[in-house]
Image (cartoon, rainbow, N blue to C red; front, side):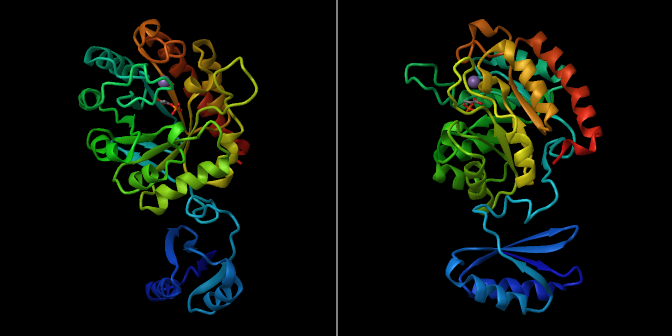
Length: 344
Ligand code: PEP
Ligand code: MN
């Protein structure tokens, strides 16, 4: 449930409500928005909901108490009506600008990464991606350069000024990834890896959580809730395609996920048309589609010579294709932002 405090509520009244919630064995999380303070009550309230609501409604400074039936709370719009803006180095995601994350599927060598980084930076990318620890479907496929790749990513960040994002696949990798990278990625296969979500909740780095290919949006938000409840409010959500009966693409990109998520949550939403389609020619139209439905960012795989890539060769754009796509996305984003009905 949520306790909405009066706009005039004092600090003492807010603290009074929080300590009553703690005394009940529950956890209060407060959000201080433009419309006043809202306190989310998290814990097992089901059996005593009515009594608890009456008790809290009677406390000084409380305007109203509303039950919330959703299984996700801190990530919900009801709790936090304003959009979350994630600041990282000199860029922001979710502030109305378009984030463009680009770079190779895997970091393959220092030269490959730096060449890609220089080029995508010049083409207008705002974040550099590159896999260091790779979740590969086959154990015999290239597994990534690991810590060596993290060092190249940090060098590329220092050279271009772009924040870097890379995946941590297990809790034991979280600290080392956070040491080198600016944004942690949790991959689709790990969306419900709860020990990894908790570990990512405890680091001072934004986290991009990718939707599992068999996960509903509610399940995605419950997974994000673990990270936020563990103490990290800077979470980005990524739609990267779900598995359907359609076999002509690697996955089916769920475009409606973007406006639905914008209704349900305050967290920024990024689309990944590379993993969604698995096909180079389909990446530009789906990237444009994602921006047209209001995505806060796009992640695109880019490689200097896609055909020779050690992972995902069929879906990576070359440097020129990315330059053209990035130039096409900006005006679409500007058009969408200018239309008041674009955000639900
Ligand atoms: C990736 O972005 O490197 C990746 C492996 O994507 P996903 O987890 O969406 O498959
Ligand atoms: Mn890939």
